[in-house]
Length: 249
Length: 201
Image (cartoon, rainbow over all chains, first blue to last red; front, top):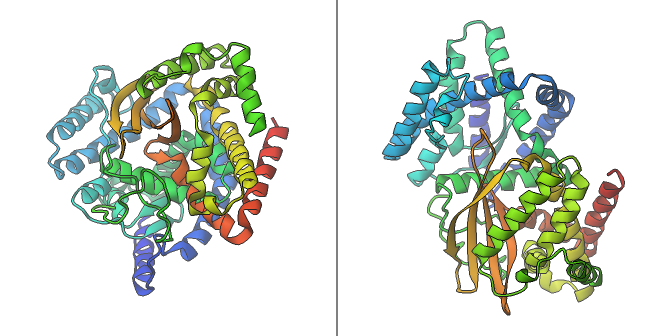
């Protein structure tokens, strides 16, 4: 799994080597990878996720989702602390504490019933909070959309996440596959919209970039993210008035 | 467009649309009332996605400015289109939005919509109503409606789910299709998808 990291880095180097002012400079590399991911999705991942969604007993589905959600909460603590956000950090800490113990290693989300609200922070958002730009958009094999900045989160998870403590490779593969299938099952409702898109690659990219922009600003972005190749696209969109300065794209 | 007007008229006449919708309500009131009605429709018809789609479409049509939505999605190419092309594009874009998004509403059977805040847009004729959709046991989904006032009525010209705007998300694709195949090419592509999509329902 750690092979993805050098791959992402080499993609980044390619990006630096070729001058582009395009907001998706790696598109020529990304598109074939998208096709590749998409082929795997069609052949294996999506059917598995559909089967997971249709046949696996609901308590198991919830258990798996909660287990991985507990790890999200754990990594959300430093992500919030590094932004100086004390309340989200303490909430995530309390959630991990409650869910890991009373929630049987995270399988039951006891914290939400208390309720201690789930937070949404990750290291990519932390970097964005401090004004680090996203860098080029990446389509990562076996993973999906990412930007160079936002790769901070998956990279830290590969380094310090539970996957590192699982010894045999088979165990690591089983862990990651379960995560992937469960996460993919949660995305099944989006498939209809993606299938309808005239250009699914661009649709996913633009949705991903907008979503990250929104999250970095905690749901309160100063202006909508400008997504355009053409500098002269200053049409009468009411919301597109100040696309010139983007402190933290 | 004539079809759209006909549809709206038909809905009004059959009394599906409450008279109160017609004038001067604030965006927040419009969102509260219509989300309540939409959730009622979903709950009553949760086994029949096509029925949900049609009834929700009828309920929200008077609130949506599809022409404005299409204009923004088409960006600077809008001005280069003839009125006929603009109408055709609006019709196909609208059909696509309804087909794609309103057909998938049955999963929101147990959802609740809460208004989080109302934000002034860049002028007094613009307002964003920010809501949260909550499903039991899941993270709330932010759902924001952008309103614009034309003459006396507030109309929705964009919807963002999780910060992802409908018009922004179609703008690039529309631009690249128009660049290579022209506006008629885009209309044709949307129309053929709409046609094939409705036949396998």
